[in-house]
Length: 493
Image (cartoon, one colour):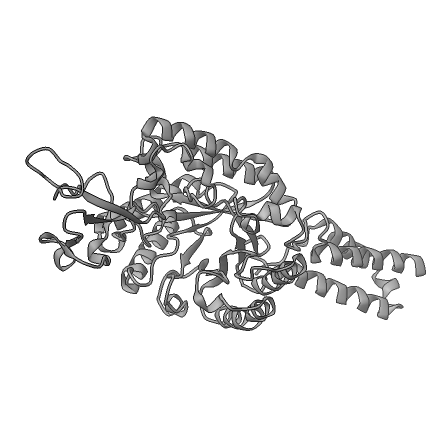
């Protein structure tokens, strides 16, 4: 916390006036006392909610831009000719002759058999170009009575990330699609819009391959570095700050499409090579942007899986990442994301990670869990005020790291909610998340699903966020009070 310098015009005016009029003011001690109280309030208003020279973070995520998430913009995949067989699609095969399913004996690694009546995990395969399951038959294949004929059932096709897009289109077409997307999905006008509506920070998800731009390894497509540079430039134009978030690590840290997973596997935590590549990306980003005036912080990894990433592995990685950022900057915030799933955020407060400007990132969604399915609108709102607020306050009081609600959204599982109920839900979240010592960031700036779309929420009055033009800061209020007091003093004297 720090106060603004005493050279500020308004405060300087007051101090000079008081100094010159000291003898006169002594005859009006109650007026002088009033001004002193105003100065104290003014100083306090300057110091509260200060983070290395700025207010608490009120941010928006640029999700789905430099790391692809198909649900955010489904049209990105419209031109893939065989979209139902993207990388990671899970399939089952049943012999039309035997009416039995193909099975990986003992879960895989040994024989493949055709002897299962009911398909389950051992009978479900991921379709990838590197691994093929073939039925070799000597002769001319036929149908039904032929042992080489199988009925294929698609079980899931839920990965629509960078890997699926690039392999689905092929390099040249994917490059064309992504170049257009990166130039149009987030623009300078979008940054202007958020800056004019109460936002002061951009949280920008990137993939590990950005450090090898413009020629990242296949199947990834170059061009994200140029787009990130543009985002920093736009942020500087509108006096915003940037948080770079390593959203996708090599081998995937959570098996989801937003970690650029190929097939749902989580290989990052068990691979020294993948962890090293992630740290190389942090080194690259830190060295490139450390001295940029728009940089606020670097988030070392997004949403590592609690079930797959051991806490010891994660803490070791976070400590190395912290040291890398500090090699280039003594002031940039280093952000550690909580593990998703069954994990206690206190585990990161109890670990000895970093000594200055450190932040723990929590993601708060009233979704994705059966716990929220039967909650009414009022239940959701009360959950925010009680459970969320209690945790935020407890972590605010914990030693060490600041608290950041890095992702949240004005959406829930209330199917028939009115606009007024959405507004109340949004108000509750804004009020509670404003209590976080570092601040919050909305997910996401644009989205095909309206209530996830920050711009749509603002334009359609579903999220009651005060704009920067209508919001009077405590600094301006105190300055106005001081000036008015000075003119009053001048008048009565």
